[in-house]
Image (cartoon, rainbow, N blue to C red; front, side):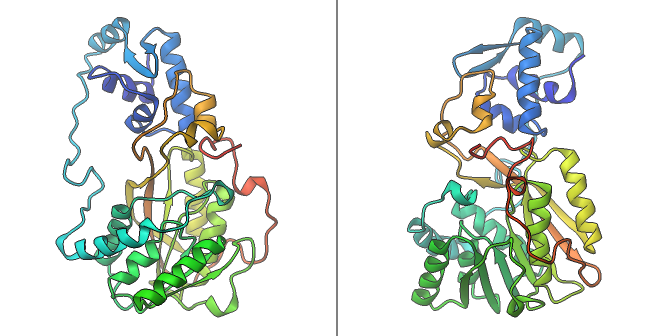
Length: 343
């Protein structure tokens, strides 16, 4: 009997052959589980590999017919690509300005595990904050901002203050330059999350945003630093977490940590963030997703990597999971689910 992940794969393959990146998007397991499922399906002769394409075999079709499973029915929204938000008319001018600024940003670097979302994605983040009442008149902190979402927030003219703490000084300098040139209520300073949150940022903000590294330690470290910046009860926070490199075992550990910090999860937007992990560099940087693939891998030409966007809200005073300085080591960045970071 095929398992759920294998079913999610072959019910899409009955419609058309797919490459590895498309297969990863067809299911909701992690990458490690997906690669294992592909190997298992091949071992059972339920799929065929031809070049970089994966197709369902005749035996696979017979299995689906025997189980009375129909071909996949795509019921997702074609307008918003299933993420629930489009760039509304009132935010299109902000997008136009932001695209101009985004074009000249410093390039992402593997040194800091950077992954950038497209400009439209940043605007959809802004819209979601606006929808939830976390934009107008708010003081907003961002821990890490390689995709310049802080600029998109500031361009609306709605927050009282937007401040970025970022390890990459190229980004710090660029944000401060953009803020000055465009007269934005926006600032940035250099900061390494292994250090305690600077005192002048503690209990100063209403909202935080962060896109942490995908380990339990890393995620809870980033959220802890941000949590200490919040004023208190009813303050909110946003962060991204994928299911590609975070198994449900990791999700539950992270959720336990959030609850212990007195956060409640109010919103979960599945696969909301799309990252610009495209081109030949994916093949050249030694990612496990390429090394461990049972099928030939071509360079992806669309933003295949996605993460879920969480909204948190404090129900009482915050209890940070981490307060003091921590030692930087590989366990902050790497674990057994890490498949899209250079090893």
